[in-house]
Figure 1 (tube, rainbow, N blue to C red):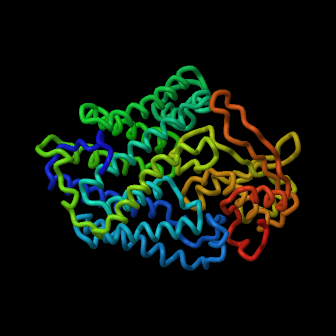
Figure 2: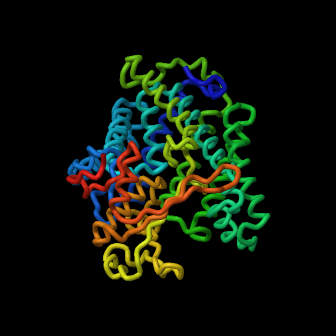
Figure 3: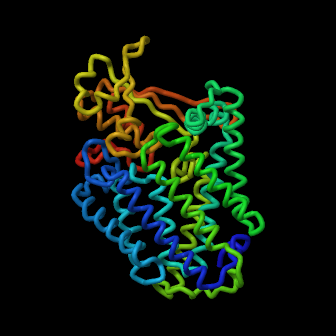
Length: 438
């Protein structure tokens, strides 16, 4: 089984098994490093609100996060040692997926792009034989590049000059291009085109070596753009790019070196699988097909931004939280450092919940308005601003014009009513005993 044009690794069976085992160790090492870099996010912390995916998880005791986190870390350490050639390593990868799934359901902020990607790869490597695992892993990575590139072919991304990526690269290389200048727009377009060409090039044997080198160079440039001499992003963002360099080298380099047999010649049972049951393998294949196709529904408001791999896109929906300048003292304990100066128009102050997230959890803010409305509710509850907190909601930008719909909500009741229109939960854990949803 597999996508035929991706089934062109030219190593012998032992080489394929070695590549799959190395990839499983890379997943384990990457997961441990990224969890360590965002450690507060995975604990039952109260410094930043936690918003479960479903209302039932608002009633799950927070202390259960600790055993789930321990299980995830121990599983990754075991998989790092055992790899995927041993059943223990495969079971460890599967256990990691289960633990991460629980933690993410308890707080959707934890659905960081890297956590989602590593969980999918771990599932592939745990259940499928080595030869097939390489095929489906390649398909997943190609889809990530493809969807990420599509999200950048957007009026807002080009018009903004590539956002923080091009701005960070310009700062790193000390290029004075001017904000949203023509050179920045050209670089933004080149970035989107380059990512799309990498996705296409990785699909075929003849272009794979060049595409691999291009992908490594692209992630090196992202490290420069987002690193200490550029946009100064948090360590997790940089570590994910480092992981991609290692992952691509293993998946499209080591598993694709010149040699004897082709993938079609490698027996699908060449590596020990967890179970010979065909339904389990069919389920995993179906899940990966869903993960590849589901991002295409993001423009229609079905798939969330990060599972659609629109990581650096500038067009998704946005939300801003405001408080009155007279209430600054009431929020000082929680978000004092993240309150901007009052606006001249109405004296309201923007609360930088994105910076609050970065400092409290060491992770970027989950980009859905549903999640951000929950943050506003938690802030209003903590500071006693139920009737005075205000949010400005902007919908996704029009793909061709950049125009957005917008409206303003004032007070917790209006925010809760807005959340009633979403089938996923937007209320924080501290609202477990309240019936604010229909």
